[in-house]
Image 1 (cartoon, rainbow, N blue to C red):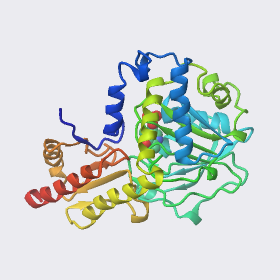
Image 2: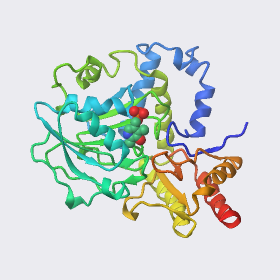
Image 3: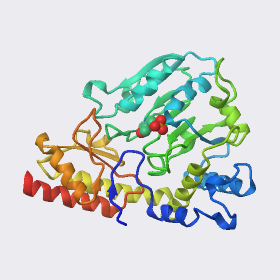
Length: 360
Ligand SMILES: *Cc1c(COP(=O)(O)O)cnc(C)c1O
């Protein structure tokens, strides 16, 4: 068996320790005589798994007691609709900050339910920066302010948390959650699909302040109502049991890495290594404003795009895989989530130097 360094944007690399532990527990979880996949979600064994995962996540992110943590399905994309359904609460306007492909999808969906006010957009600069903090045009009395702290495709990350005063701040943290500490109390709602930085696909995490739930727009499906999910501990129906379990193993792995402070240090180093290599070369380039560069998704182009295919092919032969950039951006993209070991980034940087020397 040989594992490659997988730079996929999602579903993405998982910690090897976690995969091994789940392998060991595959047939017989803790003497239960069955796999976690085979357990009733209402049985004692599975409930202990689910509750431990929530407790570990709450500890890692220091989630205050007045926040619900929901383990849902439907992906971050379902939340694009669930958020207006739950958070409009009689209001008709929501503010959205448009910084890239995922913001745009969230905005398009919200427009089906409310009036969207664009508090800022970086579309004119082709989504290579974040708006200046003092340029945000926020609507007093808006239902909420939505933004995407890390744009997975553009590799653009906010260097600040927008200050929305008493208007609840909503963040799509799909590709940056758990990469560093955050102050949850600054947010009304945080959501994330699991398959970037938390676990396998199929699980969607929502962390929501409890005073914001309970009033949905007419016609909201029962399953999309946060109150339903909160009242039933995310078990109104069958939850994504195995993904929830694996995410729980990832949370424990993170605790062993020094929690989110420890992770932040590692991520700062890893991304620094890659950006330094790009900046030191005339052959590679990253288009993103330096203050808005993502720690998690690093797009880069070659000086000669005709070499793209050769780059990808030679990289793959060396075990550096899934580096092709998103079709809308072109070039390359290295996603270096928590589970990407530092050796993977070092191997990529070494390969890039060698490729430039021999082909550039
Ligand atoms: C991947 C991604 C999504 C979509 O997630 P799904 O779980 O596939 O719906 C939304 N927002 C961001 C920032 C993402 O990276």
